[in-house]
Image 1: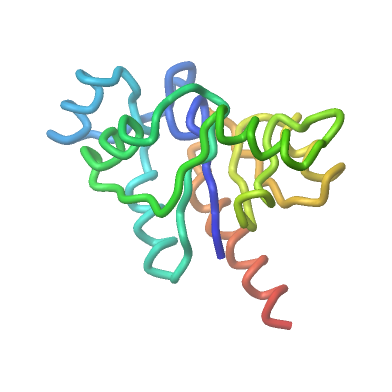
Image 2: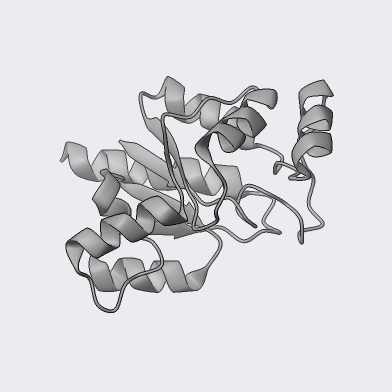
Length: 158
């Protein structure tokens, strides 16, 4: 399964008062990029990859792939794929979707997208893709992702 994550307020914990990843890599990443990574992301990504899934980033920001990969690498995280706003726009333009959704994971073979916005979930329902909404202040967010992954895995096994 291919699982993607939004960055702002999903993986980056700026507004949230919740805990962020710590350690030397996290300190360097925060100094270089000013994007504190949400606590639990490193272990979650590792667990998803251990279960045989691809982990992607799907952001509608203008962050570049090298910047994002470096930021995550400093936290000990590798990703399998990356989508940013220009890539998303090219995909939507090619599909001639009107009105255009803010994200469209099926264009990139993504089975489950994790985001903090209800609007993305509404678009998922409208356009037929799976979205799990996790709030920026939810301390159990990683467990919810693993639960959603398990349910999807079990439903496709039937």
